Length: 167
Length: 348
Image (cartoon, rainbow over all chains, first blue to last red; front, side, top):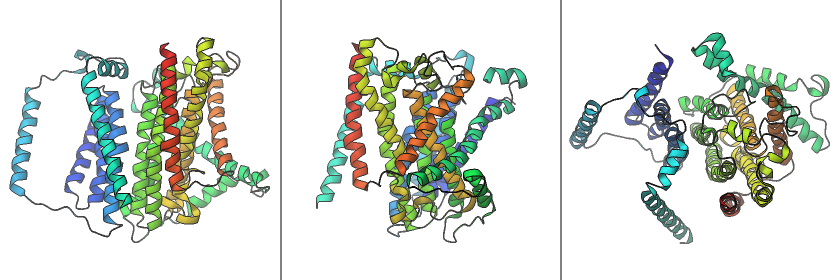
């Protein structure tokens, strides 16, 4: 077997096993930490798809920011306040319906996509400059709108945090 | 080096193992040297002698320390979360070691010559944060949790000044690949980014205040990211015993220490690559070449490691609020001015 193929299966296995732990683990802390490996595996898959910028951004944002925030939240609520946070199964029927619908959509995409192997694809030598150029020319409006919304969210968060401290 | 090895053994997994191994060898040797340096520097600064018995001037003491750590019983506290407790130190080391993949060691050797090198190092070191949080939580100990929390908050806040300072250098050099960044600065000390890079003289002089500021901030943020004094609140001995690694002993403790020392070199190495010309010689063509490159980059990186040790034994610890104040209200505004200034000068 080719080395890239083995690496693909390793990353896929990491993603799937970690994902399964996230969903099935009874302890919410285990779920949170298993997310690290799931994100890491997905980043590895991005690298194999020649999307290196996306892979590094995935690590930066999901592992560096979102996951740390999540773990902070979990840690502050479980041990410090001494409330046992456990996950359980509720709403079996609606969950089953939604999962079935989602799986249907995913399988449909999987079957109907015209998959191309690597040589056919356009693989740029450097991805970052092209993403940067696209963001500041073709997609400048969505980019600016997103940044303004983020700024608003940031100011809002700071406002809420400060008000609580004064009371 | 990659082509050379490829021609000898061909495309196989052995090739990749051999390409990935040199930084590990470097880290192990470097950690031994630095343990000794740290003790000796601290001792001489305080008018003491430190180790004097094992070998001349105690030079074999780190080896003895390692032998002791290897023999120590590897205890896991009864109330700890066993799987996470065992995994945490390895995760911290993996996060650090992954950063070394994109750190050049010479014009001929870099673990992985990727285009996003600098960005990748910043991103992958966030795994360390998760490892620290894991260690703190799994220890099931108040001090460990507080240490881990402080550590994570600190690293997350100081990642922003690091990334912004990196951006200043990247704007001047026009590449995220650390090898390209260094090639841009080749040709002597005056071509280093900290002195404005190889640009026309007027532009260099205009850039100088911004690049020097960005470089200093990068170093300060680097010290904070590796949790060393004056930013060592996560391990504040007087309040938290040892912080996140309080409950660790034996080899696991040693791995935490190894990761800390490796991280010290990583931040120093990145700063040296971005601002001080990495493996390029300060005298232009004199003393340059792949092997001299190893010497220069290790010398530059190690100088900053030495500086970190020096600072550790000179300055007192900051308070938590001062720590956050420094990052958000001092370093980041300065860097925004730097970014704006550098952008303006480069466009003009």
